[in-house]
Length: 163
Image (cartoon, rainbow, N blue to C red; front, side, top):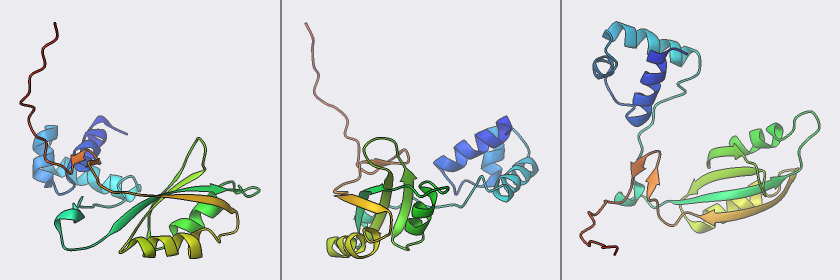
């Protein structure tokens, strides 16, 4: 990967709507160079898509997001991959990660209600062959995600003096 490609990825990760002309100015190259580099990154599957980061709390849409710890029995010759593949095919699933530590997979899902998420875990996720246990954690409030702050930062007005 070139230095230019690395810089483009950093800038697009911060703001995927950044026009190529702005990317070119920020990188100090011609817009044609940006066009070619972005196309190459897309063709190679390095750029997988473009997404807006939405603060759903400020909309009228009701959603519940959960992080689910999943313990599994790895399958011969496939390890964790086959079970992860079964899980990530569900529409409710936003992300699946293989983890180190006390559980094997982290699954992030969203639903309209707590009951909808609980039903997904009990009736769809936990019954997958190889899943040996789950622990569901509901996200109560987002403070920061992908470097974006979800809460307004208030300036500190109190001064603390150390003597």
